[in-house]
Image (tube, rainbow, N blue to C red; front, side, top):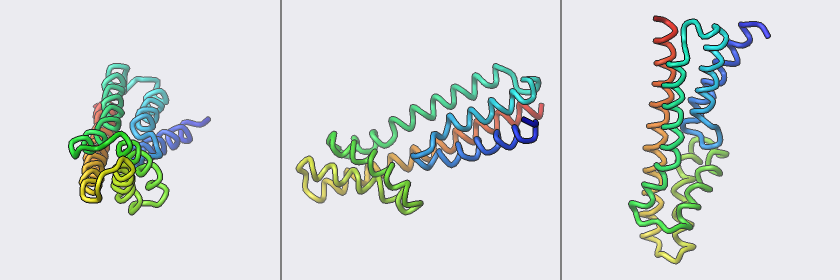
Length: 160
């Protein structure tokens, strides 16, 4: 492969990863890390070394942890049942298939339906749905910020 094609693949991985920060169907941080690691490799690690890649990898791991915790934490704070937690995950994943509106509505509906299945009333189910949605939103913003920080660290290391 030519270096230009490799740089293109690297850039596409990073862009897909940043999109994956808010789209649950794409592995955001792993894609960003893979793209940045490929970019470092293309340059034979001359400008971006292993120390920088370790920091970027640690940020990717942090992003993954946030992904696991954020929606669950938001739903749990609202008193979610296990069914609501499963519903929030299913709702976020299925919602991504329907674009931005699905991403906004999916976690809420999934958690609310799960809470209704668990036997709660509509008001409590709505609170749990809102909690899951809030957690999903906060988690997405944090993952996007971490993804951008990964890129910034790479760019600074590459430039200096």
